[in-house]
Image (cartoon, rainbow, N blue to C red; front, side, top):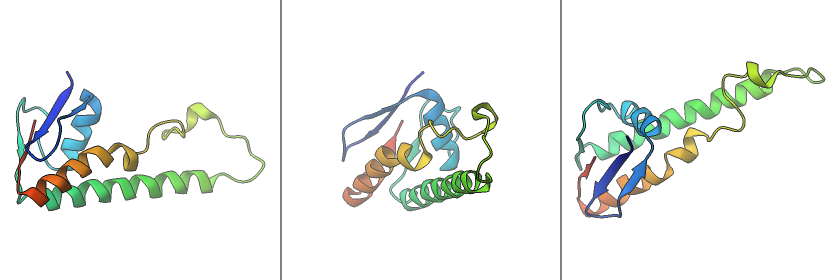
Length: 111
């Protein structure tokens, strides 16, 4: 089931189930709730949590790519973080934009 994030400050944001559930968990929200709200007061903490998780993932990705000695071929299936996957830092951009614009206009975000 896709999630639809809504705010009176922005257009709707539709996200696939797995991606939305991950982001909701990062923000401390229950993805099991069919409906929920991120209040204006909760938005700064939600943005900080998303950005911290993205920075952590980026550090983990960089650490894995730097840990491989030169000349050794790495098995692509052995890497738990695929270099072809979309980084969390890119995946959070539309939601963080929605949260920032909603906070600026004093509007809650619901799903």
